[in-house]
Length: 204
Ligand code: DC
Image 1 (cartoon, protein in one colour):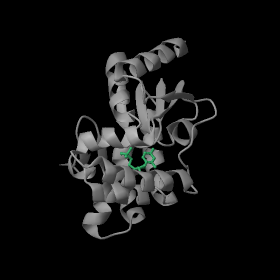
Image 2 (cartoon, rainbow, N blue to C red):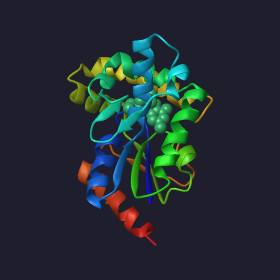
Image 3 (cartoon, rainbow, N blue to C red):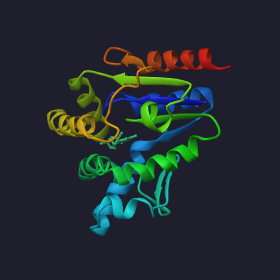
């Protein structure tokens, strides 16, 4: 079974997806980390993301490995966030990432988190959730995580979210059959319980 969790930055996807996976005994797939790896490799090699994307060995388990190197911290740097959002707008990069994501999701039980999981990567997912939160709350959460200034995070996030929403290929948008969940005033536990209930209801 695949549970697809999409939404903008800071809506709570990673925290929620990890917790849902743990509760249900599913495997967590952070697809944003894959785009971040492509961006990091391109920055390090001064190459175009599309040139490096297909040849990279990316593993996004408990630690994120890029060609065997632990880049879990490096991919969270603000410069990589910005470069990842640009790389993710390139159709060739997306084609390579989506192919790998579909290969992984083909068997087993997964909670996959991203921007296009319910629309493109796994349109047949048993459960689709689109998480949102108001922009100020998204920025506050991200800033807390990064130890950064909320105002700066809000401005940077607005640019990236707008790019993710307006790109030609797989723009950030809810699947027509996704359940929309505004997490602004919900606790992590409340959101996790809601998604776990959707998963139980979808079990054959
Ligand atoms: O979720 P995140 O911030 O780690 O994602 C990094 C970038 O990758 C972000 O700009 C959106 C993009 N992304 C995407 O386009 N499609 C996905 N499935 C996941 C992330």
